[in-house]
Image (cartoon, rainbow, N blue to C red):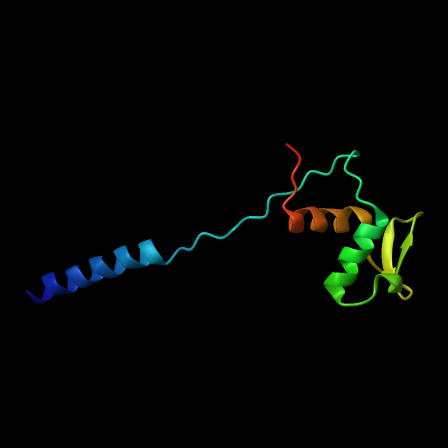
Amino acid sequence: MNKTLKNTFLFIFLCSSLTFGCKKTEKLVPVEIEKTTQISIDILKAYFADMVNIKPSDIQYNEKTEQFSIGDYDQIDRKGLTESYLRSKNISKK
């Protein structure tokens, strides 16, 4: 009887751990950025400024390198910031 009880508890434990032990995680789906998806620099600056809690006027954009910078330090490129902006707005091209 002791062996049967032990096996029953083991079976219940395994079933519950398999059922509740694995959580589904949300996977990030890459946002396809087409060349026609051009978000203005001013909108991206405002979005970036809101993210880092500074004024948009404190952010510079270098057209040659397509980098947004704060002070003299490049922070993020235009493509990366556009992807982040589109994800935040839940915009996707279909």
